[in-house]
Length: 144
Figure (cartoon, helix red, strand yellow):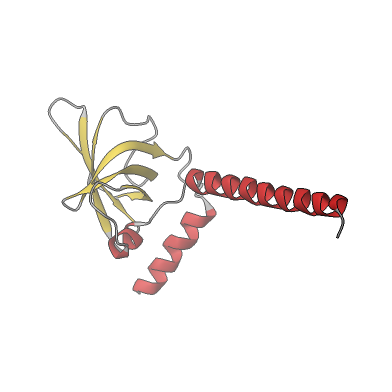
């Protein structure tokens, strides 16, 4: 192998290594931005550490919404119709928040209560993400 061929080979190796690093960084960045959530049943089965931020999705259980006297703090139950998780939230709820509505809640588990940082309500009770709908239906069938 002459000097020119060695330089080409070295250039190709450097290019492949740099391309691999770039692809790895892109995949790592995408992994951190994926917004997956647990249903209450999945959350109860998962090994979630206290103070670990989690996202759950489900329905606001009927007759579970309780406001404190100031009206700024609320406690409610999110259900997948199999298991329930109690959620505590301090702040202003979305206008579309109501019992029976699908919500996605982000927060940290503390003493079996999710201390919510963010509450998102779906715009239409008939609309539900396919992933959530499939999970909820599968868990209903599994529980029956």
